[in-house]
Amino acid sequence: MTIKKLAILIGISLITLGLMVNPAVAKKPSLAAWKADFDPSGAKYRCIVSNVSHPVIKGVYAGFAFRDELWKRTNGQIYIDYKPFSMLGGEVEVLNQLQMGAIQGMGVSSVAAVNLGPRFGLVNLPFLINSFEKLDKFAASGQLFDHFMMAMDHQGIIGIDITGYGNYGWATTTPVRSIADAKKLKFRTAEAPVNQLIYREWGINPVAMPWPDVPVALKQGVIDGLDHTPMVCSITKKFEVAKYFTYLDYAQGLFIWIFNKAWFNKLPMDLQKTFKETLHDVAAKIRVETKTQEAIQIMNSSRKGILYFKLPDAEMTILRKKGDLAHKKFAKEINKLYPGDTYRPADYLGEVQAFIGYMP
View 1 (cartoon, rainbow, N blue to C red):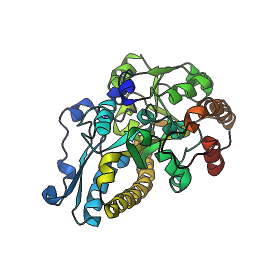
View 2: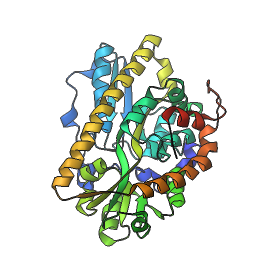
View 3: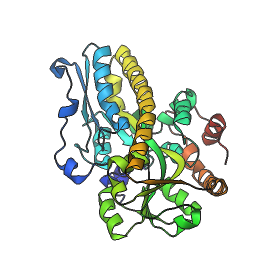
View 4: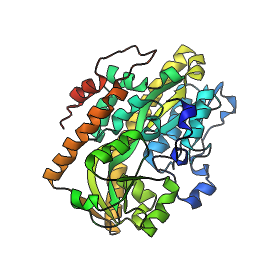
């Protein structure tokens, strides 16, 4: 799917993954707390990078960490001008800017990215890359990870690394202790095809909804819950209404750090190497910090009265087996090859499943 076609998808432009901050913050975002402690005016290369969310989330803060570390390692040659808070627009709008070269980089949600590069849907599949440990293993897999990051290469966009925001589950207005409980509720989910497919296989009706509409929808009963991570639900105050959370840990919420290929290729080879190495190092460190941040957010929200549940093992087995149907149905999209792919496996999804140790 091209970026122009993607632009017509309903709601994606309103931040598909739902990591926007509350309206009071989003109206007048300030970067004062993250101001660089150096003067970037002498930089030879300037790279404008966007993200839709709030840098209090470690996976978003990664952009500032990358800015500072790259400045040091390149002796001030490259300045990352990082714009979180949707300062440059929604994800569809920014992706258009990125492809045209108006900006040079983006930390894009994996849910939005899959509409442009279906291969990115790999990380959204249930119970595959569904833990911090598996995410790190995949990121260190070499050829498999490199192939994943080539998902948009044919569209002039390169991927380099990933950061995240925790494990997905259900935040609800009433307790969910079983699949039967879940089937009685209406869940807000991302609009990406793979996510819709997962919920249909589970027999749970998803409600596609722009993230800014979620608070009112929860209060008015239009939806009874949302598919998201406890960290985001805590930080964005969704727990003020949805006071219950059911652990599923079926996928990790991720940002994929992508860049305009033409801009990147204009960098001298030594700076290209430093650029990639720096982002890899920063992303690995941020992923460790994200695991800690999630634990802290769960602890803090528990102290404030949020109740956490787990489904019985037998019911988790049901979700796994039904979720495996989503793997099979989306495999064709993930396995699709494009011009420029240097690695051309017959069954890329199968190779990743085997490497990770996926068991339906």
